[in-house]
Amino acid sequence: MRTSLTGILAMAGACTIWGLSAIYYKLLAHVPPAEVLAHRTIWSALFFAVILAGRGRLSTVAHLVRGPRVAALVAFASIMIGANWFVFIFAVQAGRVVETSLGYFIFPLVSVALGAAIFRERPSRAQGIAIALAAAGVATLILGLGAAPWLSFVLAVTFGFYGVAKKAIEANAMASVTAEVVLLMPLAIGWLVWATPGWGAFTGWDALLLAASGPLTALPLILFTMASRRLSLSTVGVIGYLNPTLQFLCATLLFGERFTMWHAAAFGAIWTALAIYSGETFVRRRRLRAVPPVT
Image 1 (cartoon, rainbow, N blue to C red):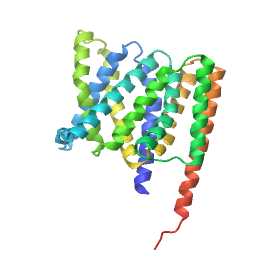
Image 2: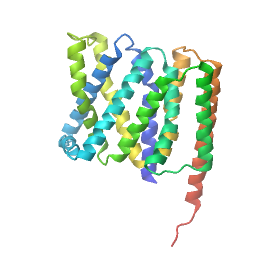
Image 3: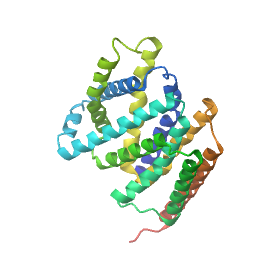
Image 4: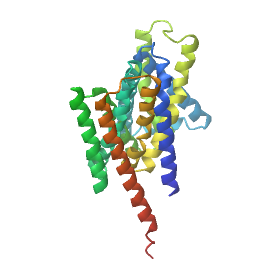
């Protein structure tokens, strides 16, 4: 029970930070997204390295990638999270935060599907109805707008597969995410050297904002890794709705983005699905706790 509670709190914390991070990246809308991503990668790696070095555990990163299977999983996770970061930064700067929120509303569907396909986690009948309802909401949006929300799909799929990789990697949370950003560092440094001669945007107030991307990125990644290893992917998916809900509020209330009747229909179906999904999960857990142990 304590392990589950820790996982739930960790996932909620990660989603709160992610959900409000659009405000931060909006402040950097004048900086090219690839440059922001490069700085995000480098400062995250440095932030992790300092923490691990202070704990005398920096060598755990090297030990983590010695085995070919784990090294492949870490490399795959780094590709997925790197792609996810870039698309998110691009979408925020382009004024498409409503699409990012939709992507993370779709993510739990992807998470449940991957959990069933890879880890044989079977959703209940009520959860299956909720998934179908949410999928219908997404289909409604596609038909209404006349185009598939590709940014949303990319965010959902990359983050879904990232969760699969994190669940499969049996390692310390901080060591695994450090290994991921370290693998991305050569690309980040290469991009800054090639595409941003001089210091680019790394001056004045922008320099402080870009450097802050390290801890802003590191903390929710650690929390998400802790949650992925302690909870089923279905539970991770349910709590994950907190992230896009906050993104949606930022998009509509702070950024004034366009919200059509098709968006309203789709989001209404998805929120209803969330209520069914969460309610069924809560009832099932209460029933399990009420069953006396077999002696």
